[in-house]
Amino acid sequence: MVMKRKLIILGIFIVSLLLYISCNKDFLNTEPQDRIASSATWADGPLSEAFIFNVYSYLFYAGFHEEMLSSLTDEALFTHGRDYKITNEGTETPSNMGWFNDTFRWGNLWEAIRQANVALQELPNSTFDDDVLRERLIGEAYFLRAYYYHQLLRHWGGIPIIDKPYGLNEDYSIARNTFEECVNFVIDDLDKAIANLDGKPETDGRASKLSAMALKSRVLLYAASDLHDATTAQTNSSLLDEYNNIELVAYTGGGQQSRYQAARDAALAVLNEAPGWKLNLDAPVGPDQGRENYIALYCGGQSAVADASAVEDLLWQRTHTAQYTVENDWPLGGINFGINNGPNGYHNWAGNTPIQQLVDDYEMMDGSRFDWDNPAHSADPYADRDPRFYATIMYDGADWKPRPPDVAATDPANQVQTGYYDDGAGGVINGIDTRDAALESWNGSFTHYYVRKFIDPDPTKTDNQSVAQTIPWPFLRVTEVALNYAEACYKTGDEATARLWINRIRFRAGMPAITDSGNDLWDRIINERRIELAYEEHRLFDCKRWMIAENTLGSPVQIINVQATLKPGATPHVPYRHDKNVYDYTYTVVLETGRENRTWNDKMYWRPISRDEMNRNDKLIQNPGYVTE
Image (tube, rainbow, N blue to C red):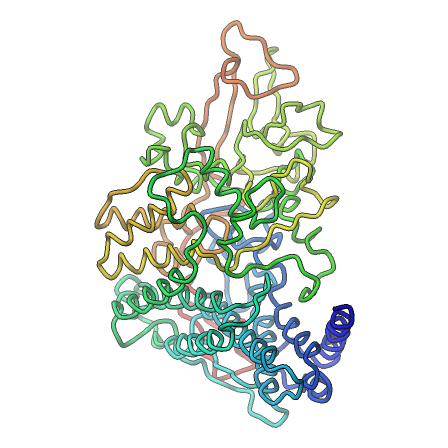
């Protein structure tokens, strides 16, 4: 094992040196990155494995970047602005690209695909003496190429299909393939991955047969959705109706029902082999257990205070490993979710803060909708809600970890303070976690909420850089597949099975069964997916593929203002702590337009291809609504 580890480390060094010398950032790079690999890497099993680890490295921080995909949706507002404003206000153009992090950057995705192509070209002819490893690595390469193509496909629509590393004397100009051709290519790669990975060893963080099956389920569900059916999309959008190359972003033939049936079959195949974690309940657990179940799910078996068996839900995750990372600080600094998103009163940065629209979509415990026009709801909006709310959102008065030593005396109760409180002497106490606090106000939330999900709840682990957190990023999990299955069942007319699986998810979370049908059931499916998969990079694509983005992604950001006044004759707490017996609390929803004036334009269904890329390849056709200068 020691010798193998040394060889892997050596392999990573060689591959990294190779890439440093020969790698060009253009996606049609022609520098021969496989020269050293041909003479050494493919003759040695551990070095070949190290090459595949390098292909994984393009996953970067996965969803744990400081700037999350959630802030392009009605889940969150990014506190520190940056290029989100360009994207969310619909002013993005091919020469003025909006928000990207490394995970979704066009050039990075193409670099990853090129490395997968090199592996798929060389591995079948490799000479190391381990057929099982060879087949596994080929399966992983097919899976990774499919995954990176799927990322390109859901951001840009049909893209050029490049299935080999380009040589020096080849024509680098290549046209976009149709959306259907790209989906077929990805599904073919996944089928090959499934075949090669069947029966092979499984390692956390690496592709497996089940992860390939789960990704197939997702890709087919997306392909069946309204945005990708030309007739439906053009009926719903005048911009798409006028687009002369609709085949680049949607199916122009075949039946939408048959595509939903394919998605249903793919999801069921996964569920038959991976029944999931606590998805066999026939009645809801109690609220406290529901909350703990949800915390355990997002901890992925990596918290000392959560049920480790919840790892059964994970099918593929970005995990803490030195094998395939290009960063030096996993899981500190750049991707410590706690410091990136926790309250400023804990010396954190409040990055992607929940907005009121997300908070309002958590149901009441009895399964009814929350309603600000209901006096009981508006008087105490955080009471008696879906247990997943308490596991996902930090709100004013919520219990949290012990404060850092320099703040502890100000808040010995360890409660989130995002409101403004009567001091009993005609003044106001600014909550420690507001932007009006004395402590790191520039990192305070504009929405008066913070995200709790994905932060290790272990009170001995601080949220900042001093203590590592190892919560994995859930690329694919059984629950997503169950939701895929429910959606596809509904779309193919099987409402009973759709309800069954939605209720199984709800029972685990402590929520009552639903009995809806028709459009009401569809609304439940939409909301259940929103709540269960919050902050997991699904909402952006769900709103687009369902073509509900105008009323979700395009809505102005809503926030909450919390005020506390002393009850008659009451004495204020010093230091302040949340107490409904001492204070009367009022909650006012307002619009936050100082950071972003969110809007929707149908061109936003797709990202523009950059001006530089269009100039580099004159066969590319731009996405609808964008003009390349």
